[in-house]
Image 1 (cartoon, one colour):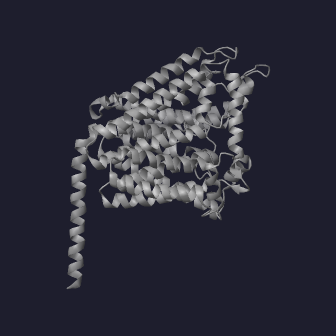
Image 2: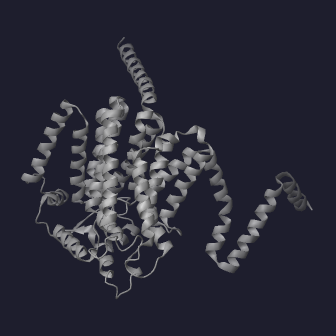
Image 3: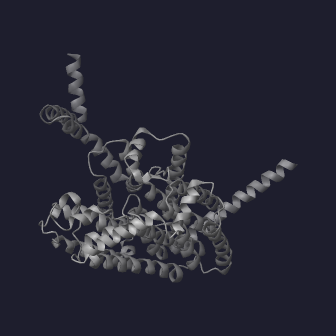
Length: 504
């Protein structure tokens, strides 16, 4: 009788919630009996999903950093745990949810910042990819689902990254917080590669590497840390090193400068462990872009001299050859390198077939989709070894031309923004860093198939989107920087007074 009264009182106090939970419980049991464990888990997850949705609705910042964190760690997570849905779908749903929530509260965001050259170029590329739905070069029929699977990775996610970053990173404090969070993730990546070298790999990582011969070069293991593979890890860390070096030069807040300098050194250490020689070339190219955009003779001469000495040591001497990673990095400048020759042979093979497919074989088309008798099957079997080659095969010379032209215009637009539209020197440094990183990752994408990999699209395309939004943030940046410098001076004054008092 007491138990019955307790249930009745609970139902009276909680209304329909108790009934709903009871119905969900019975539904979960029914699905477990009828459809198995997966359906059971799906149903019992509904309350948790509703609660998470409520938190995200109340705090869009939480949702944004959830997206950012998932982009950075999703490949690390999927290597160790099974996720029943495509990881790209999780990323896309979170981006669309952020955009939908922003539209529900338009007054809090500057949507006008999204209207720029970069948006136009991304729209042109997306329209071209939409036209590709009618491409049936292989003669196997049009498959909308297959096309959409490829198009959302090749074009739609670029647009989502631009919109999400521009809308949600709309103030100096949010920009600095984003850079600090990314820096912390880079520290974790550097720690994890140290752990892999000095403590050992997890069982999941061992399984992944033993099934990936590319991670063994010259008998040496190429480490991938928490990324999808060693090339993605090395090139991303090289681009990050460029960003944090530039920030440590330009920012006027001492604690941020020191922190970013330390992170840049960790990033340099980490990308050497990847054994990816392209990372070295990307790092050098990123620093070169920085020197071109800096507009400072002092920085250009000083950094240029150090840059030239570094290149001379790497190319023309044998210093550091006792280290296997440095020896591998040196092969980036060896025109007779065997693996570079294999890539050139692959490109020549593809070029013979691509003459008959100026629009490519079709977006989303993979080896399993092409019949064995089809002449284009060989194209899908040859390793692309490069994001640009992958785009070339799927969209042909026409698509590759459109992609290159839109990318170059976006990059030039960002350079003009940095050189002409931003007056504050430290804010210009942020723009230079993100623009140089965009160039760095694209150079890496020319040599390896990493451009569209997690977390590169959100960070580097999103970073370039932030560059376009910096001029509208400049006035607020001036105020924020003045306040931070005042706090910095006050802390110095208090430390000095404390030091003097201790001497008395």
